[in-house]
Length: 244
Image 1: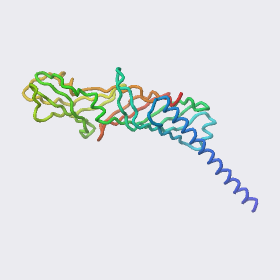
Image 2 (image 1 turned 45 degrees about the horizontal axis):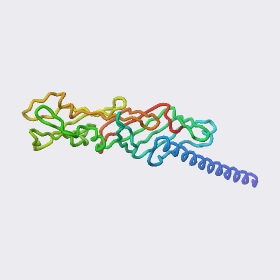
Image 3 (image 1 turned 90 degrees about the vertical axis):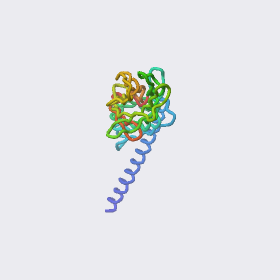
Image 4 (image 1 turned 180 degrees about the vertical axis):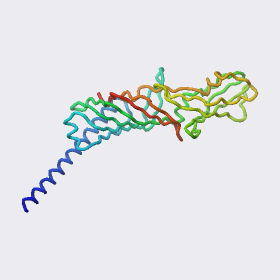
C-alpha cells in the first residue's frame, strides 16, 4: 500500500512537471510567433497570439499546430494603388494546421478564418467628400451611419447655386465585398427636388468602393455587413503566412 501511494505521488509530480514544461514552452512559442508577425507586417504593437490544444509539446514533435488564434488592434491596410492607408479595428483570425520551423522563423497555416471591422469614419474617407457637380447642383457625402437591418445610411449634402439645401438627403445602401473591395451601393436614389438628374450622376456620389490590400499573411475579404459603428468583415484564406 505504501509503495502504491509513493507511485501515485511520483505520477502526480511528474504530471505536474510535464504540464508546467508544456505551458512554459507554449508561452515561449506564442511570444516568438507574435514577434515574428509584428516584424513581418510592420505592426505598431505586438499582436496577441494564442496557441490552442494540449499538450503543446506533442504538437511540436509533429511539426504542426492544430489551432492558433491571432488578434491585431489598429491594423493599417493599403487602401488603393496610391498607397493610402485605412485603419482596421480588431482583426482576429483563427489559423488551422499551422506548420512551422524549429526556431519559429517561419509559420504557415493551411487555412484561416476571422473577423475585422472598419469604422464609418474610416470608410467615409473613400466617399465623395468634395463637392461634385450633379446636374444643376453639386453634392457630397457628409456622413455614414447604421441604417438598420444591415444597411448603411449615406447622408448627402446638396447645394444649388452655391446655396445648401435646408436639409441633407439620405439613402439606405447595401454593402458587399467584391474581391478585395468593400462596395456601398444605394438601394434607391435621393430626390433633388424639382431638378432632373441622371441616375449615373447621382450614383457617382452615393455609390463608392474601398479597396483593401495587403491584409496580414495574405488573408482575403469574404463577407461584409453594416453594424452599429462601422462595417463588420469576415476574412478567410489558405496557405496563410504568420512568419517567415
